[in-house]
Image 1 (cartoon, one colour):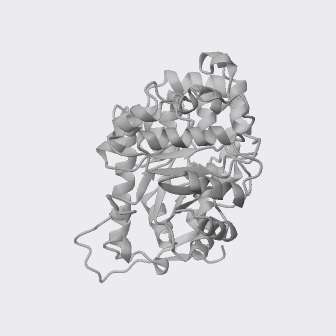
Image 2: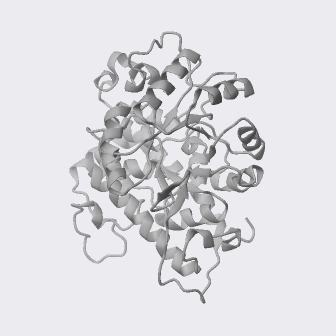
Image 3: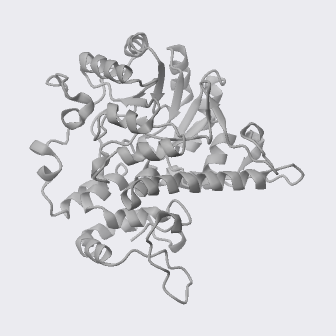
Length: 411
């Protein structure tokens, strides 16, 4: 049962349906996967390969069918009533693209230079933890897809696979996302391991500030008949106890992912430790953006953790303009959250983003088809971005500016 905006089915009504999830999942798994059926006289053909799907969101239904209820619930969940999660994507509809006709668009260049490296597209694969929940080979097919598409990968410190084999599969340096935890010795050890493995950037997540209320996940867990110990040895869900990144590190004093005093003193200490680029991930206000620049951040990610950690009701695309303005373009500003179309990428670039990260879409592709699914998601977004660039009269990314979009009337 996919969340299809065309049918009027909302995430809230979908979650209400989780009370009958066992029957739904059983029927979905037994049913052969088919393309979405909309106004067809005949049933659409069975889906046998990733290249049959027409857009990124079509992968979600196939991922749901492929995954156990709790694993899909973990992927799909937001915080509280999932309002912020939904807002992340829906808010892109608040912005309209201004089309220009009299421009030579015979050649479209989607490349972007980030820290001296030329990217083919202004998209990177954002950090997602525990990918073995979605595919038996975990992060490796994602790394292989990033390699085949020459794409930057941000690896989660909660990854199911250690950084070394991931980087070998990628064939290029990763950006290593970290949770600092409340034990500095663990922070120090994780960063040293990442840099020794070749990571060129450390991305500190700053939006995990304590317990979170993931109702969608909890409902899904209630109807999942499997034993947690099948996936979580010792029934431990603590990331620092199970992720390979923390292997060999004394985590006995860790009680939480983020230090309670995430202050200037902590960031300054971190800046002195990190040899490469320092990214602060989870900045959503101008004030925090100024703080990040003043304390040595090399980049910011405008992110609310995909709506998973807090129910603010504020979409990242709506936060982006004030963050960009506050940085005065002194450092790159990335954004993630709700990006599902090439038009979403275009709007983010127009509002000042250097590049965008995708999280859930890469996992939908992974769960449905493995490496080829991730590659298909990347390719679809690339084709859609090139298409809207032609329609908007912007032959390269430099031509996309704040005047390329307007906010919808009445929003």
